Length: 184
Ligand SMILES: Nc1ncnc2c1ncn2[C@@H]1O[C@H](COP(=O)(O)OP(=O)(O)OP(=O)(O)O)[C@@H](O)[C@H]1O
Ligand SMILES: Nc1nc2c(ncn2[C@@H]2O[C@H](COP(=O)(O)O)[C@@H](O)[C@H]2O)c(=O)[nH]1
Image 1 (cartoon, protein in one colour):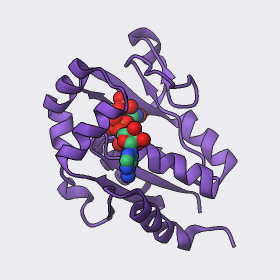
Image 2 (tube, helix red, strand yellow):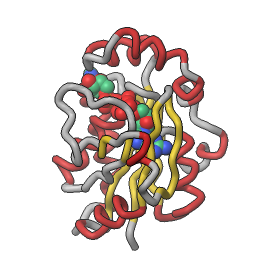
Image 3 (cartoon, rainbow, N blue to C red):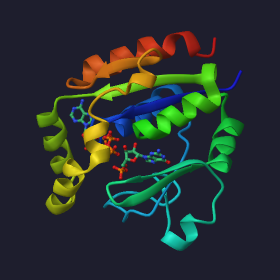
Image 4 (spheres, rainbow, N blue to C red):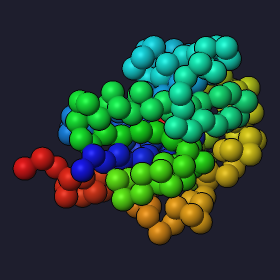
């Protein structure tokens, strides 16, 4: 059965780092999603995101799309199918609204991971990532960021919580979660 690891949690908690780890260690492809937010230094078109204008964003066929801190984000059916053509087990990074949508759509096919850290660590990491201080402040104050600090009630029964303060412990916990799904 095809499966999808949904990585969700607050901005800066480390979802993308976990997704990269899954690709490097386990060859688990990441679903590339679409956004209208400006490209960060080092981000690669078609690898980190498909970067869109408001006009081009509207032309895709989305499984779900959201507004997050003033920009649009969406995951397309095509993107998911493209990843599932490579491997039966893939991953995706989503805010908690997107994670709820995937759980409703794909049920038992979803392996749900909620990545968390303290607020102080989140703020520090967003700054270390090189995000613009004005953009960080707007993000920290956004209702979406505040919402994603806690695991929503509808995800609680299914989510495995990974506290990402210490990367060694995080990677060990991810290894344990992946173990039953590894190709023999
Ligand atoms: N355990 C860790 N220790 C130190 N730095 C970390 C750790 N995990 C992630 N980081 C760093 O913190 C920053 C934020 O991580 P990352 O981009 O993976 O978060 P994210 O949850 O995907 O954020 P967003 O939702 O905004 O895309 C990155 O610079 C990343 O390298
Ligand atoms: N529901 C969705 N959430 C998405 C998608 N792509 C990314 N995201 C989430 O947006 C925020 C902000 O991301 P950033 O890269 O600008 O820091 C973060 O929580 C991502 O997980 C998507 O297609 N759908």
